[in-house]
Image (tube, rainbow, N blue to C red; front, top):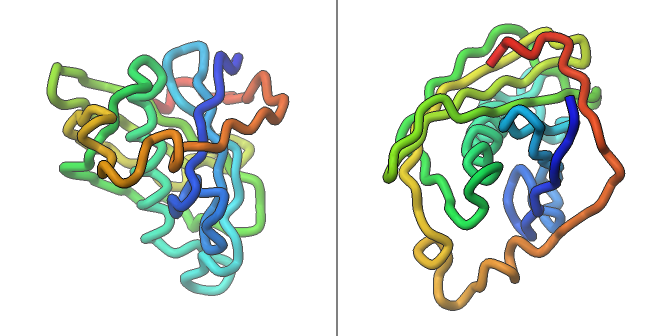
Length: 171
């Protein structure tokens, strides 16, 4: 599936923050079907049991990619999580390439709902969520002391033009 754009990374976010030493530093891509996707790896310090990523990290990643689905069409709005329901299907390893995808499944002027999945590179669904968000403007999302461009400052070009999803129907 073709990548149509790349979303910015922040300084400090646990999932996308480029200056967060404990973070995932995940990139996010706008896809031709209106979804958002990521290619990433959890790291050993994201561990729960040996060789498994902590459920809290998995949930945080799913929340991030589901919320970023809004940015595919509305990059000046943010989603504030009001509810999230996570299902853990199989152990999520760390230290191996993974991919994820999120897509809006319902939209209204004030709220949206999205579904997201984390998969291995063979498209086996390891974890998934449905989440609901309140829409918040950029002006309300950021404290007056921090400007959006100061926090969401990383526009990293990495040459990714396609992400293969063998099973495009899992969303």
